[in-house]
Length: 138
Ligand SMILES: [Zn+2]
Ligand SMILES: [Zn+2]
Image 1: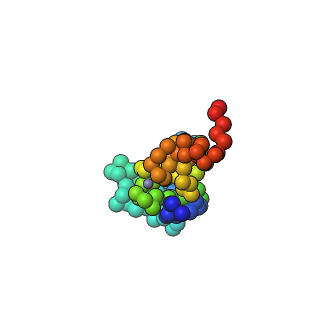
Image 2: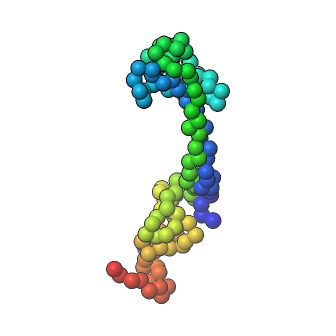
Image 3: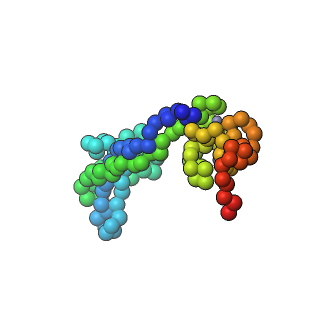
């Protein structure tokens, strides 16, 4: 295999909770702060303005009781692959139909390709023609 798969395409769990307070005067408005599953806000990471707001909310000034919203979700992460030859990152080449190294152009599982790339450094398209492959020009 020309490429080492660092990690397969997968689903990753993003854990995210928010501590929320509804504004008592403005319907639909309120304040939210990132927190853990138990509603603990990492106060040290809050910017100063948010910190003041948080302190006001915790005192219950103009806001309803605190509640925790679970925003955790699964996100799809594409497979990361690296070229064995140069260590470059690969991408999927749509017109070639295989994974291609972004640095050296290596095609996964191929020796040559209609796009002109070849492992030998020659013209892959010409090589294919020499091998008797039929190439449709469109
Ligand atoms: Zn190609
Ligand atoms: Zn490469």
